[in-house]
Image 1 (cartoon, rainbow, N blue to C red):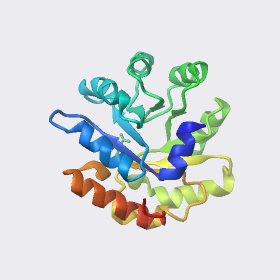
Image 2 (cartoon, protein in one colour):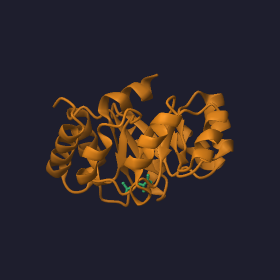
Image 3 (cartoon, helix red, strand yellow):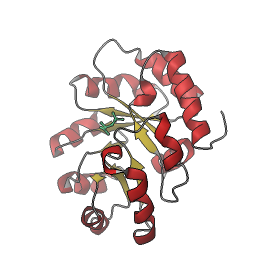
Length: 203
Ligand code: 3PG
């Protein structure tokens, strides 16, 4: 599947909350040039949907983040989102995404939540918020008991934590907003350092 392949290749899921003033085109160009083919744009601000539309022709696989209702999921897909991410598990969103054939990555923390997601046919899950809940340690334990699940740990992760996540067998990609802070040159530097820490070849 396209989105999963892109995540597996990039091992990073950059996350953007648009607040106005960002140069979205320049950002998309840096991501493409650095081999990160995806971008999650959160719906935390009203500009999120518009950014999905603006970047529709950017060549990136765009997803909507912080999807908290069925209405938001529908609006995000109409604006061009190719995948959906939620902080928690929204069953109505899971059903819609399944009907539409759109990958959905709900947030989970506990084993019971992982089990519920699996019952709904979901096996790629966001682990959120990762750092306050010792994400690397928890995911190592989950690798033993839920070997069929791959995770997108997100929340509070920065460069310094990447060596903890890099060796996890169930890591699909690390998500976070830290990658996209600052100007194009800083973003490029952060992506390169992150890839090195995740032991990925430079572009
Ligand atoms: C999210 O919406 O997934 C998180 O807020 C991302 O967390 P971060 O901003 O700490 O990377």
